[in-house]
Image (cartoon, rainbow, N blue to C red; front, side):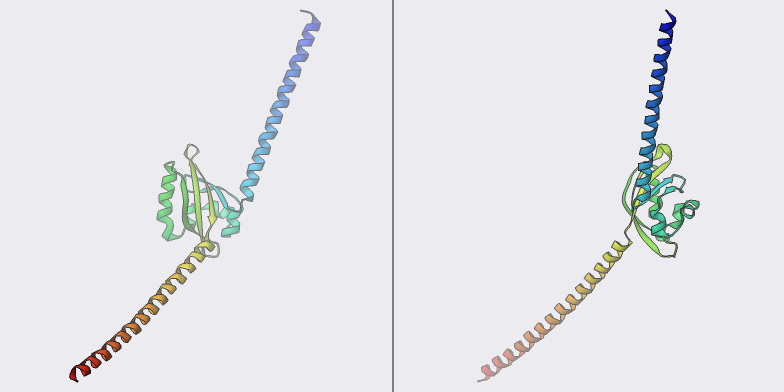
Length: 196
């Protein structure tokens, strides 16, 4: 082997290494871009996005949490998330959490979370466990307005049923009173015609 062959081989090896390095850098850039896009999607979502731990604490939250509930992310991550759940919903929330810890996804679960102003917001949840990482990935949607409208519709329907019942009752009573009066009149007429 000549020194020219050795120099050519070394140059080829360097070219291959440069190409491999360029490929690795391109892959790293693509991975960083994908991570940035995913992070942007997570952060800009109108729904409440979160990653929670099986230890009962939020690990990552998007800005929608602050928008919908008024708490800072730090305030939400410093306490167990059950501390923000309405007392009447804690038992059901704990049961869903136990299912998630057992690797069972949750779809359309609803509970109430306390807003910073002391009021409560209805949240509708979809969650998937990643028990191998001791995490839960979840999305919640604020359905407080829908719940309020639903309650108003039910109240209107109840009032209408009550009104209709009264009208039917009053109308039926009037009809029965009319039948009774007519019956009484006919009875008198028959009694009079029998006498003559």
